[in-house]
Image (cartoon, rainbow, N blue to C red; front, top):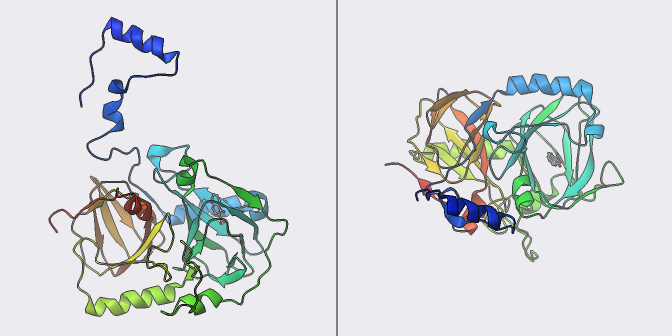
Length: 346
Ligand code: 1HN
C-alpha cells in the first residue's frame, strides 16, 4: 500500500475535518494493515546477576510492604515507559527478603511466577499456601487474593509475568487491597496438587475454571517429565523437547491469557529457525547457550531472561543440557484465529 500524494486541496481538507475529530483512512492504512507483523518490540536479554545486584540495592531502599510488590520491571527497549516486555505482556523480577510480607491484594490481571533463586518462601492464593523452589511455576488467577512471605534466611527472586497490557487494552482493570496483610489459610498445603495434579479429577468437578486449579507446578515433576521423555522422544528440529503447561480440567493452556512452556535442549543441539506471531519471554533455568534473534546473538546462562518479538526468526543453541521456561499470549491469539507460526524448512 503506497502513501497517497499530498496536494494543497487535500491538506486543507485534512485540516478542516481534523477539527471535527475525523481523519482520512487512506493516509494511515499502510501502517494499520501491514503485510507482516511490524512490532516496536525489540529482542533483548537481561543478565540475572545484574538484576540481583539492583534488587539488593532496592531492598535497602524500600520494604515489600511499602512497595506492595518489590519488582523491577523488564522494559522492552522498543517500548520504554510502557511497563511491558512485549506489546501484550508485563514481566518483572520480584525479590522477597527474610521477614518480608507482600500484602494480600487481588486484581483482574492474571499473574504467573517462575522461581529463579532461593527456596522456602511462600505464596498464598485463594486460601492455600505453597512453598516455592527454583523452577516452580506458580499461578495467580484473575481476582484471586494473593500474598507472599519470606520466613527463611535467604532472599528469593522470581520472574513475574502478567497480562497487564491486555487488561489495559480492554479497559477492564479492577483491583482491591485486603484489610489483612496475609489471607486466612483454609486448605492444607498441597491440596490443589493432590486433587488435580495426578491425572485425577474430583468426580463431580464443577464448571471448570479457565485457569488451572493447580497453582504450583513444582519443578521436580516438570524436570522429571523432561528427563524421562528425553529417552523416548525424538527431538523437534525447532524446539528440542518442548511441553506446554495445561489446565487438567480442560486440557487447554494453564492460564487463559498466557501460554507457558518448558523445553529441554540437549547439549550440542542447535535448533532450526522458527518464528511465530506470539512474542515470547524466556527464562533459562539450567544450562548455558545462545539464541540468535533476527540478526542479534544473546548468550544466556542460568536465570538469564530474554525476549523474542513477534515474527522474528529465532534459533537456540545449547552448550550443555539446557532448560528454558517461556511464556507468551498464544492462548489468546489461537482463540482469535490470529496465531501463525513458520518452521522455515524444518
Ligand atoms: C502483582 O500483584 C505481583 O502479586 C507482581 O506478586 C507483580 C506487577 C504489576 C501489578 C501487580 C504479585 C505485579 C503485580
